[in-house]
Image 1 (cartoon, rainbow, N blue to C red):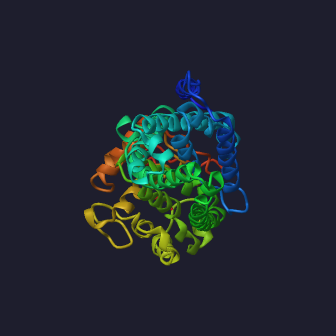
Image 2 (image 1 turned 45 degrees about the vertical axis):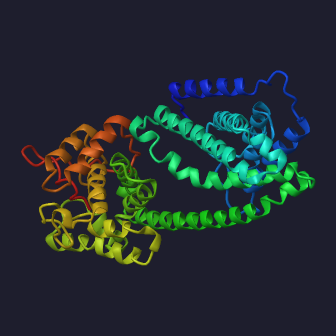
Image 3 (image 1 turned 180 degrees about the horizontal axis):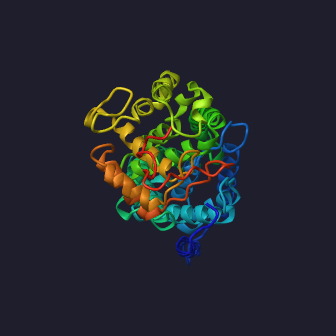
Length: 443
């Protein structure tokens, strides 16, 4: 997202101002600058390694939280917060604007580490670390980790609500519960680093704690590499469909986007939202088994030709049946042309017999079909398409899914890409003829 809304920039500026205040040194507190420099260099170096080709795939930000939390357990709050700054400002960022994202990440980590350090010191954790009393140190360290997690969650939810206009009731949903367990593990590693650092063995022994963490990070990287391979498989299938049916180029990606909007509006968890995005993207993959001349035919189809077209959900299901990570997306590929009144295909399922994923994709598919120009129909305005979906809800579409899409589009808007370069303008029906085919009746 290159065009960052003004409200998001103001929000980031406010967070940055708060972070700068946290970096002000405390009067009368001695700061071991050599330790600050060593931990900052360690954090920055580890973050660079995590994003190098040696690991195989970029880790998400915050992979080396143990180093930051060790700083929170060892140093005064402003000094501990300073440890995160070089690594965050020098980190690799793929999305634009790069500078703003780096500043945001640095400010976020400064506030989180500062809060963790303050809580840890207030509960007497520093004395426990110095004395090596690990059982007593667990309580303050746990409270510090919770403070760190809460600050990051609050800031992340705020940026979602401000920059992407996610409803407040959903912006913070699940952020703490998803991140608390892994950050707690990182906190335990950070506590071990801090205790060893203060032991007679010194900082060198503390670095040994990172070795088992590096093994887990490598395994995590392999998981993400496998996930990237899944994405590449899906892209290849979609590109094959786009090449075969030029008029619907980009349709699959937009249906995936609309399916994701519906799923989020319904409050589904992130993993299921991703599966429904896959379902929307792959819903038409069965068209690879349909003759190209039928897909590109101008004008109405004969009954025999339509029966051939209506086989594409079954073709698609056969193609993706063995891809395990797709989960319920396979059911959506098979049933996205079913109708609530039982007149759909391929099996004529009714109402709740139709899988929920298929009901989501059916609405997303029809919406994009109506708002895109095809060889046989002109694109309708978004408002007209939504009104048509409402008119057909209860008979063809699930009213819950329609209402979710209407709400999501009303809040975030809909800006579809051009589907294809249409050489000939679409045929305009004569006066008195229907405006177009029913929603979802596209090829």
